[in-house]
Amino acid sequence: MGKGLTGVTIFLLAAILVMGIVFFANKLNKNATSVSEIAGGVTVGKKCADSDGADAYTSKGTCRGTNGNFIDYCQGSYVMEYYCSNNRCLAKSVPCPSGYSCSDGACVAPCTDECSPLGYVQCTGYLTFKKCGNYDSDTCLEWGSSVSCPSGYTCSGGTCVASSTFDFSLSVSPISGIVVQGSSITATVTTTLTSGSTQLVSFSASSTIPRAIVSFSPTSCYPTCTSTMTISTNFTTPMGTYTIIITATGGGKTRSTTYTLTVH
Image (cartoon, rainbow, N blue to C red; front, side, top):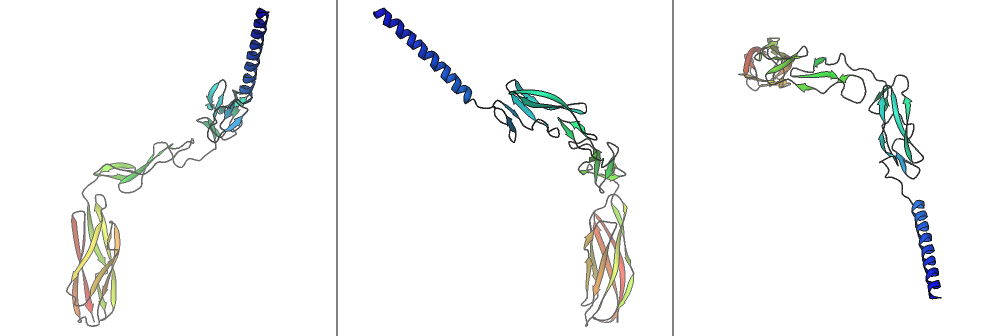
């Protein structure tokens, strides 16, 4: 009798163990979590995720399924687009639309070259230049960022060349004028670049005119350039003829010219 009870007990324990295994297996299968979704992606089923959706041929996506991780790629003008099917990642060949091209796993919209040909260089200033190339994700050419020539060089005709010594000339027009006491008069001061790369020059003036003010607008500039000189007199400024010395200084150079003013 004792042996019979022992056999029944073992049978019951075995049955309970099998039922427990089946129960937990079903529980795990029912509550199985999906693979980690890609940021901004779309989950398909419970165990597969496609970051850009099955037909998003204009964006590069990643598929993560039970059979592994796969990234969209280009094959000529076609996109090999991965998508989810029965928790697995499968691939299909998608032709890019007319005018589009395939680049880095996605169909790229048509574009227009901003410059041509590839490698062409254009000066953007006395000391800087830009180069034509492909600097973004599309297939078209565009201008790169402005780059400075090496020290001691200037940009000319799309090439950085050794610069000559900076120099300029100075002139004023007209060279003389007549003003009534208490009024003002103007003249145009011109600096002309004669060699080297341009550098900033500043204007100043000296005169013996009592109670008169000489000003410049602008007070400095890069030759070749002009500035307006204004001479303002006072009602008490003595009548007579005066000489004004105009000076421009910059780049280690100083140039002067004269203007004659008669006060009535």
